[in-house]
Length: 313
Image (cartoon, rainbow, N blue to C red; front, side, top):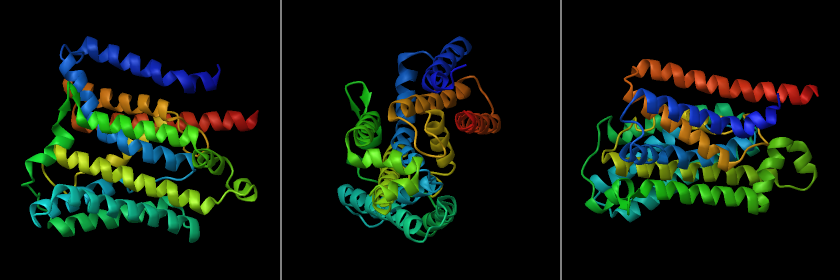
């Protein structure tokens, strides 16, 4: 069996199999309205997945993405509803916070040499706590009506969040395929020491990758706030695992150096179809968590097995 072909095309076969299964299982699944609904549901996942893909390509990980979403959600909500700030300024300030936080992640990992897992795990707790402190654990409501366009608006029949996701995925793909920095992501993820010896400024690459991850997580948080019309300190709880699963399912190696945004799109679609389909056929929320965990385990297991086979040969 050619593992590279399985990696490249298996994701699309799995997606097709899921669509067929849920189409047979539920009359409500393969309808125009539900398919549009799925694309809108996955938009936040897709936006954050681009940042996570960059981080994994580098050989790192960002477990704080869900908490970044929660914090941006709460900051923007508080600025608009409590401080009466114009939505544009509230969005700029909120995104600046998540972008700066992402930069600090990169700075700490690059300069202090702390493991990305520990840095972002600590960040996950810190940011979640900050979101609770700002909101007092109470949902925040009452935003200007114009703000709802970001998460609830349409251009024709296409939801605005889907357009935002597509634009960010195109930007992500452009960075990876058409810029020097994109090539550096692969090089550093494949062999950091060799990259440094060949003249690549590894620190700068790490700054950029984690900064972009923070920015994209922040945008996902703004879209989520606009869609739900409610600022929640737990808005991004568990979100990082969905993002990580989608990216690894999309073929981005957990150990770095391999992956494409095009395949990540398929991973995001699988997560969207799976979540939507399980709700339609009344799978318990507890079983949904078990199934998603198993999917992540299988995706990482396949990645590790392929690496083992490649190293052995």
